[in-house]
Amino acid sequence: MIAVSRGGRGTLVEYRGVSVSYGELLAVNDVSFSVERGEILCIIGPNGAGKTTLLRMTSGLLRPTGGEIWFDGLRVDRMPAHRIAALGVTQLFQDIQLFDNMTVLDNVMTGAHVWTDAGLIDTSLRLATAVDEEHRVRHAAVQQLSLLGLAGVLHERPEALSWGERKLVGLARALLCRPTLLLLDEPYGGLDTEEIDRLTKILAALVSGGMTILMVEHLMDVVMDVADRVIVLHYGEKLAEGTPDTIRGDERVIATYLGD
Ligand SMILES: Nc1ncnc2c1ncn2[C@@H]1O[C@H](COP(=O)(O)OP(=O)(O)OP(=O)(O)O)[C@@H](O)[C@H]1O
Ligand SMILES: [Mg+2]
Image (cartoon, rainbow, N blue to C red; front, side, top):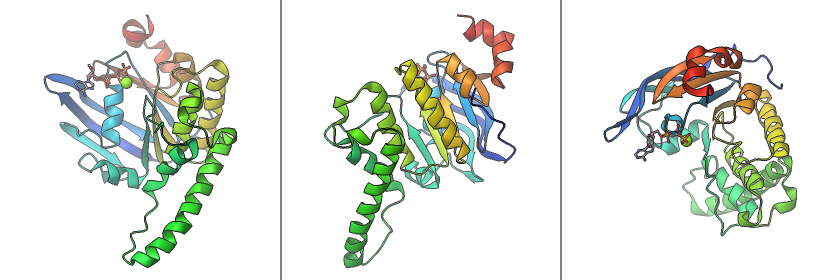
C-alpha cells in the first residue's frame, strides 16, 4: 500500500452533468464528480463505458454536448485543447503515440512545447533565446528520463524499446509539460509485475510532489492499491463513487462489473 492520506486541499476539477454523444450514441450521460487536489482518482468500468471519452473531454480533444467542466476555477469545456494544456492538463494516451523516426530524447523534448516559445516579437532575440531554450529543454528531458530509469536509452528509437519502456518514455514526455493534472489512460496495460511496481512508485512520488492524477485503469489490484478514490462508469453513467474499499464492497458494482 502506498496510499497516504492526502486531499483536503480543495477541488481541482469539477464535472457538472457532463454528457457527450457520438451521433446516436450517448457515450457519457450526465456525469458529475470532482477531482480533489493531490489525489489519485481512478475511473473504472467495462469496455465502452465512456472512460477514455471522459479523459478526452477533460483535455479538450472533445467537447461535451451537455454540462460543464471546471479546472482550477475556470470553465474549460469550451476551450481549445492547447489552452487547456497551457493551464496544466496533460494526457498520456492509451497507445502512447511516440514518434518512431525520432530518438527517445527528442520524443521527450517535444513535451516541452507547452511552456517554451516565450512569445517574443524580436526575431534575433528569439533566435538567441531559442538556443538557450533548446539547452534547457534538453537538460530537463535528460533529467526526466534519468529519473524514470531510462538514462541508457536516450538515443535509441522508440521501436527498439520494450512496451514498458515505451510507456515510461510517454510518461517522461507528459511530465515535461509540468502538468498540474495528469490524465492517464490505462498506464499499467501490458506491463509486467516489476514494471507495475515501478510505475506505482513513480505515481506515488508525483502526487507527493503535488501533482493530481486522474487515471483510467482496468487492473483492479492496481486500482485498489494506488487509488485514493474510485469512480465507476457503466454505459456512460456514473454507477458508484467512493474509496477503493467502498467500491469493492458495493453490491451494484460487484453485480455489474467486478462480479465477472
Ligand atoms: N470516435 C468515436 N466515434 C464513435 N463512437 C465512439 C468513438 N469513440 C468512442 N466511441 C464509442 O463510445 C463509447 C465509449 O467509448 P470509450 O472509448 O470512451 O470507452 P472506454 O470506457 O474507454 O472503453 P475501453 O475500456 O474499451 O477503453 C463506446 O461505445 C465506443 O464505441
Ligand atoms: Mg478506453
